[in-house]
Length: 277
Image 1 (cartoon, rainbow, N blue to C red):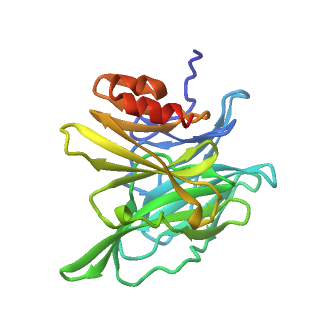
Image 2 (cartoon, rainbow, N blue to C red):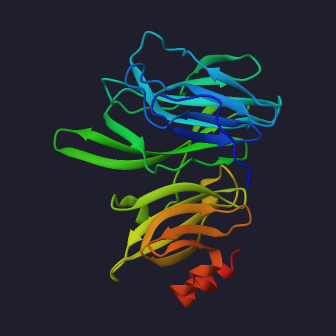
């Protein structure tokens, strides 16, 4: 293991890793109360150089950081940082988007380009983990509350951003009755370079969570969503995603459990995972 000292500092004293693709993208762990938009750094440890991405396209608007993602632009051999910001005083307004391109060392505003219903009351990301970069697209899973007065309802939306064309699109969730409820936690991830969706549901057994795994076999085709398997896990505390080779990583109260080690919980869980990795 090789230890590196970060050659720059943050207001909170803690760094948050946005992404890594030969170059590290880092930002402050906590939002800066003064500017509301955190500094972003690109750092190449191999050549001991970094760049601070200061500034914004929205200097006269009161915005705060909502989501920050980092991706490699394969067509131009370039790197991009995508910042999605919320309006500070009005959560109903649609998000504002700006993209930083390393080669030009500049930010530019990007239109969301999708319909945003006027009765949206609030929106947030459904899961706090980094979202997957699949088939040249970044993805976010939005939890949206709509309605008025006492009539409110929630829905989910997968927001996809093409790094090459810089266009957004919506991707429907699996057409399954289980996604119509609100008492489930959902997370986007990647399974063997395919877009995947985790759904967590409580179980009649105490301290047991059932994890449903959906995979989009053909990217961008909603009909290709397929329920890969469902796994009961005892004392689940943290979902870590999948490794490059499809091994499921979770954390339980008993420590870090990876892939086949889940046999210590349920024999059928072992068989399910063994068949798919």
